[in-house]
Length: 435
Image 1: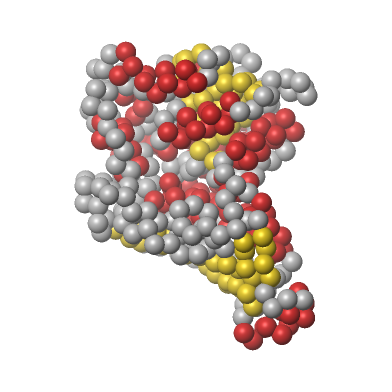
Image 2: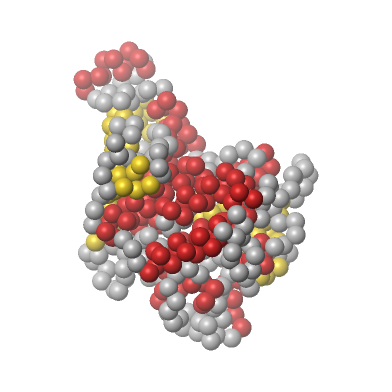
């Protein structure tokens, strides 16, 4: 679907990759520097925070818990949020422009927790400086941007972590181990869901009536900076505070929530590009002017000959247990997020395979304990450990890119009303099955 937004974002990314963006903070990927500095065992990791709303502030608090790290810079387009974060990280300098933060001498890493449409430009800018990056999910807003970021990470050899906390939980690594042992036989399908039901509609966050471009002091919002590559429109408090409802800045359920479902399946089963993807749904309940659907379904087939389905709604919280279905057995989990949490995984044989399952594994069914939600800190810690070791983090650029293909194509499928295939050789979406 060609429109002004898509074309504008493509031009914006071209300006980054060509090194022609005003301010000089982008460069050709072919000339990306190596990681900015080699850290010694006793060196403190100096980090910057870009975007310190609700999620960004939570990340800030986790970084501050680490004795080997310091938050030295903070940037946000909203002065009130920036000042509040500065009160938590008193050593940090406040920057009105994130480009100035990236230019700070001695900076090792940045955390990006902005609206989705800024993830790619900010990640590319940080990678161009040789910095390590922790970027909140989704990796980017579009598939094309994810491809560019993945290439930049490969060229720079920077550590790049996407904020899917569950990929650092022992639960999903235990699932991965069970599947590698062949406990399910041939995997044929996996399914999950992410449901909510909030009065007034999900993402209708509180609006500060004093805030805006004309606001003084802590009420000031740099609206032009916040828009970035998005279409230029007059200030809208609705769009600023509730950005997840609008296509220019977010992919709605798919980018905010389904990324959390798809990423651990990629980690545990097999990290492939999808072979074909479809997205369905609609605005069935929350007719409040939002553009993104309140009910959405992501469906994908994979070259490993299995399918994935993730139905979600923001108008009914009743959950469904995540499953991985094999020909010989089914792996049943508790929900990672807002459904039924269970501190165990069950592997239950299919009836025709009960005897062979018992002979092979010595039990009628296998229980895997201690698999509850383990919080967010593990994922932030994994990032810092990799900043020191230069190892690949748990949700690295390759995994995140392939997940983004599924997520991004599901959004595109919904918006354009057609299914897409993925040509892995060309790394491109196509309308018909590749030869």
